Length: 251
Image (cartoon, rainbow, N blue to C red; front, side, top):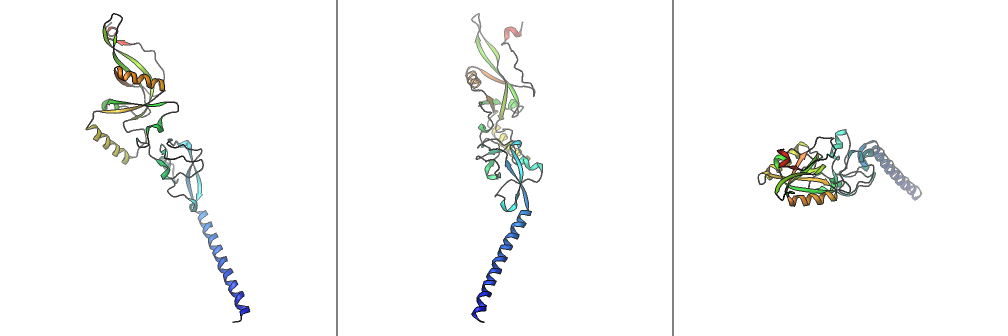
């Protein structure tokens, strides 16, 4: 074959090969773009250790080729439960795909601080009787009573009870922070609590308090006995309560 014919033929073959590669790549990209996945992204920046609420996230379409590793995908509304009430391990910028690495379940391992409202404090009361703790759930509202020995005007000493705090939000009961566990996780936590109960007949109660109220509750714990009473949902009234004494009881 003459050199004058061979060189153009080689060039033509190379051009055909390159063109085929370009067409094949474009075809793959087109096919990938047709395979769309719905993923979860934040509608605003989510801070580290922030509890993720449903209105913090939305779904957006993404080609499968651009799906991040371990990203949460959406098929039905039930998929929201995988993220809702989870805690961000790291800051998740607005619009970024939310991966399984970036979140953890709401639990003591995630930290109580993730549930504390802004400008409030998380106060933990220990030694709450299990019979009482088992009746209280996260997000309930409670009143705190203090019973102590007081010196009366007559100089006599007697027990009195005062309503120390009203309408206090419960953040958690023991290891339960209101994380909305699935059946398997709930069973595991129940078994863990039963094991703990075998060594103790009390539990802990986590409360959301202002810094001032936290101080007074700490003082009250050192002075007397603390009691916790439940309020009905929706009752946020602060009632004017008189001090309870045995004298008034038998009048």
